Structures are given as structure tokens and as C-alpha cells.
Image (cartoon, rainbow, N blue to C red; front, side, top):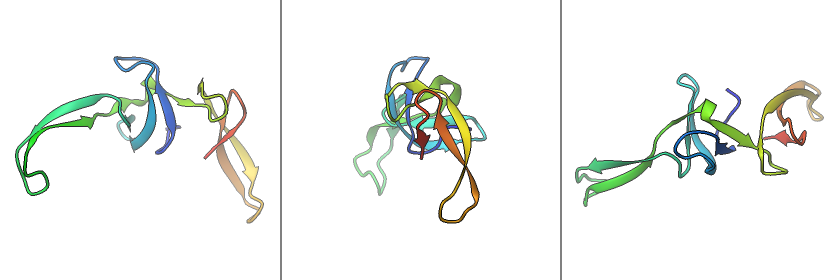
Length: 108
């Protein structure tokens, strides 16, 4: 999976099309991601130690990874992701990095 935690993504299809947010959690086995402020679901909770009042809690639900695209850090537009092998200056070892197809900018 090419999308990782803390990446900025945009939803490209579904009810939340056009919304952007930060990836909070990634589920590689299910090919799903949880995005901040996207796909909110309401859950009715009983009172407990953590939440003595109880009530309705809004929580993000997972979105399939095919419905999101990474945002280019330079242009802030949706972009595909490529891979590039670079030589690390400190260790001298080869390292694989993710690269934006639009601007060629390296992604962290």
C-alpha cells in the first residue's frame, strides 16, 4: 500500500468526494484507511468510567484506499506515487523513497 500514516489525502469518490484530511490509521490487510474528519459515523454509547454522561459519539470510519489519492506537497493537487532509489549520505546504503509523479518531490 502506497499511503501511510500522517499523509495528506483527498477523497476522489463516494459521499465525501473532494474532502481532504490527514491519514490517522492504516489497515493494509483490508486496504482501508481512516482519514481525519471524513466518513463520520454516530455511535450511541452507554455511560461508563471514561464517559460518565454517555450519549452520541461521532467517530471516523475506514475508507477504501482506492477512493483516496495522495496530495502533492508542492502543488497541493492529487498525484500518483512513484518510487525512487537513492543513496543515503550518512550510511552510504541504498534507500527506497516515495516520489510524487507531478512535481518529483520526495514524500516523507
